[in-house]
Image 1: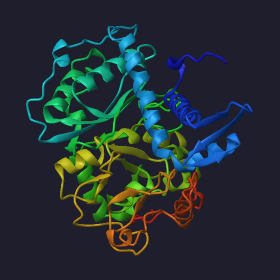
Image 2: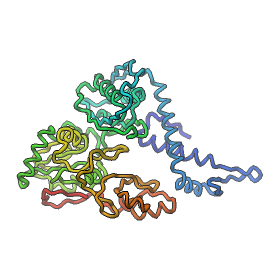
Image 3: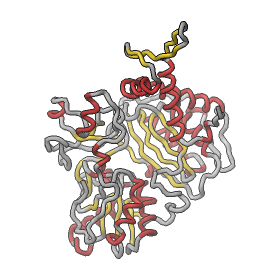
Image 4: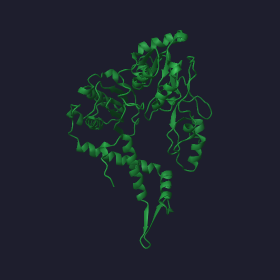
Length: 441
């Protein structure tokens, strides 16, 4: 078998490799060899399987939790091994990390009473062509010392992360980021914070990726340098005031997020594309060029990162008059205008799923149409769809996102593509003449 250098694999490739290994470990544990006849069979859940494909199907359908546990153990062991091997490696051609010995002996002084979730990103001026491993090692060690969990993406473009910890831990984390030479152009204002729960993330994940935020295009082809002009929350708020006063001459207000995000909260009069993934955005722009040609466009997203390259692509692919982006995203806007023009909750990519209150709901239960804005995952194994189901319907054991998933759940089957995904139009076509009213699904 060909030996694989794990350090050369992408995060996605590592995930597949560890999942395959975890699956194989579990299947191997079910082997039962008949010494007399030299026959091999597999025994699991008091059932005997003669064919490998049959036990594979059984394990996939009925032992998801055990496979996940094995996967997490393999991943954790690998990350610890890499960290141990390179624990003293803090310099590279492009990157110099200034370690702080005090962090290694960090002690919480706030009593872990209040948890904080940080959201941040930074695009560097010059690509990090060498040294991403160094940054990854430093980030893993820093977060573990400060008792932080979350998701951090690294690429030649810079860093994109969201982490949770106690207040003193997250404060120290921000301080450690800002003291590094590679992030000197960052400031405290680049960090967005919200109230955590202590369980917003299950683990710490630090990965090296092709893109900080997956647009699906090489960073060198669509960079942030040609993006839209920044609008501060104050400037954005003023633009929205003008938008409501004179809609005929107003720019297009474009929500760059996914449909399930804008479903539970949005700015009035925004064009909200019915997109499942951000990587579909370029194709959406290509399909709807005439909508943007000759128009001013103001974009917004959760924290600002998606607008950085989305506005670059808008300018390159269309003949729009001018493009703007909300600096710091909805998150920063709500810090200054909690009672402003934003309606509903703000979707976040962690176990909380959303922040804000439900005083003005914009969404409803998928089954009974009762106002509801709390997402939960579909309960069918293998389905990762978020679904809005009110407590009344859940009390009736309605917990799946569609009929197909409901049928799979009853038979303990996995669902690789449910009806929600299969029946959704991948790239929607907008009317050629957009009337600036709330749209999307």
